[in-house]
Length: 81
Length: 383
Image (tube, rainbow over all chains, first blue to last red; front, side):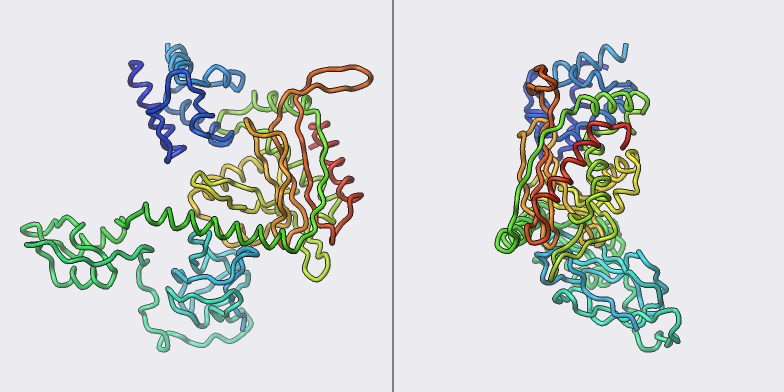
């Protein structure tokens, strides 16, 4: 899975949780939650969806490591290895 | 005979439009069954029945708008003899689900082929044939094509969204204006050191799969529910005096992404465990955002909790949702300087506010309540 694939999947999952937003417009270092106005409930749903989709397990302690698109992509790539 | 009335789904609701009957005369219904769908300012709401019996007669027709309290149907209780209804009521009542959206029937595009039956159904249901792709001979539109279009509901969804956003705005406006006009609010506030609660939560979450993970808000809901069992004066309605309620149904403010708020009830919050409360939220928040709530969830809250949560302001002073008598506000949990036993430290701090109806209670009661909530949050193991 390439970086581009992961990014596309992230966009799709975000779109499902916040249908009226435009995740494609996120810059690599934007804080995803703040930019798309995702509350803590939806953020948890997003992590659930990420874990299920990529077959990874994101402990609560790692939430801080996946705040931006850049961080999230590299986190997923590392976890999948 | 039991009268089934148009329910009030909030202080702001004056009338509702029956969108659909889900029962017909002769059907057996029991408490909690959804028997009708009503279109309100808050979207399409499933209406439950609170009695057991047999549907005797449906008094109002689909698409009819009637004031709150209007008798919509008569239900014969089990003890009453049941009158046979079949001859009286035409079978039409059992008709398949109608689409919610009506489409304007426009001129058909040139050369379009459509079977007479399909055309008749399309006209009846207000389906635009120009938007349907025919699958019959020579691309003719068949009855099946029209029925599929009805199911798929090829309505202008965007338009509907704007409508519901606007009507929710009006519903919130009406309720809040009434509140500000009629309820003399008093406001109290306290700060809670959330270190123990957050440690407890992160330990609890280590033992849970991501799907079962808990959010801090469930601890807050649990603390409120337990505190209400000790200070029940805040759980109820002001209706010619304070009417305390036995059930603790916490209305939880859910903000909609398109603007406005909805307040579904978490029933019997005091009897639910932390995990059950989280399950309730997992159920109710997505349904609220999809505007798929049941009547009991919109009409039975006995108190409201508004939780601004992570990344937001520290303090919220709520406006009471009438006829309730209190609303509790939770701000963002943020690190703040904290003085204790002569020492200064940095702690995760939560500001809790209470807005309460001064007709119903006094500051002393409110203060007792907030201190009880605070005590529980400082001893999370007791929750």
